[in-house]
Length: 168
Image (cartoon, rainbow, N blue to C red; front, side, top):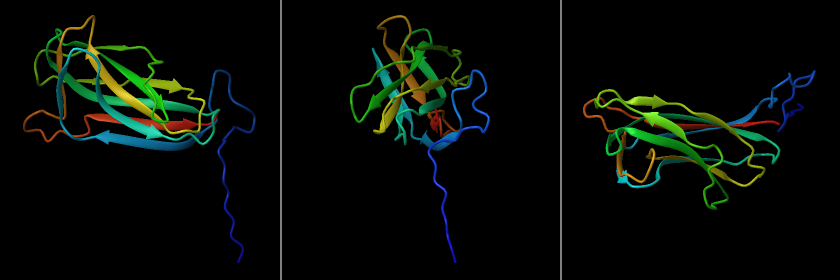
């Protein structure tokens, strides 16, 4: 019997990409879930979670889909920022996507959901790590922040990073 295997690292529509599209198809998906409790206090950036992907081609893009259910418990009037950092091959973090302003209600039972999605061009085939970071909005004031820590609700998966490699 004859066996064959089709392999590809590019998926492109037969008639080319539609106007405004940047991708021909999904090459791989990596999901990173944080189910442990994080309760932390800091005056600067706090890394909550990270996830890795190794692109198969340096021309491909990475779609970074962040899902965070969190709460600033004290500190900065419940105003905080979220950013997505990137490091390549274990190097220092860069912050190419800016900051996303977040604010949650004062009641502990009203935790917000925050879902930024960014597209990156890391231009590498080395391992890329994406970091979910938070910090106090508008200055160095201290902040206390929690995920997966509501008493009695068996909360888990408070932070999820889904990384999609898409062909350029």
